[in-house]
Length: 160
Image 1 (cartoon, rainbow, N blue to C red):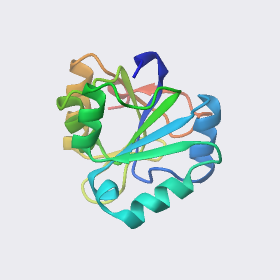
Image 2 (cartoon, rainbow, N blue to C red):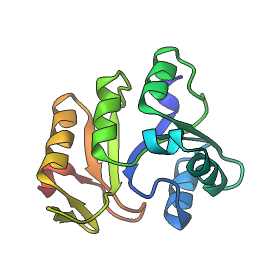
Image 3 (cartoon, rainbow, N blue to C red):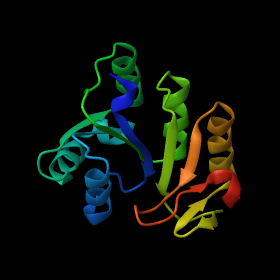
Image 4 (cartoon, rainbow, N blue to C red):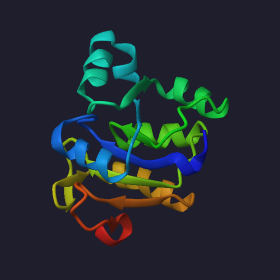
């Protein structure tokens, strides 16, 4: 995989969904969506739903973190205009630690509930989720918040 074809890496607990995802696909001329989520990859029904949820003409690949890491290492990821989706910060961090070194990650939506603090628009995070993203920042990853394309991208460190 050519890193220049990696157009967007996003955390969104809803994964592939409606108009928001369609707008990101159009904005970045996405041809391939790679969902990296152990639960979805291990559940044939969830996998099928994700594949069918993508906008027309978009190829969807659903991998466990281990499968994605292996494909990344083997350079066998799709090559054309890629969007990588994670369901949560922990998976994004685990993938990074397993060698999927992306240059930037966009936080779009994190599931609410529990000990979460609103940090930007509809984005809420726990202290441990913030720490996971701070770690990525310390590794040189640009971590920013942007729920929808029309929102201004905000650096995570400026929001907390």
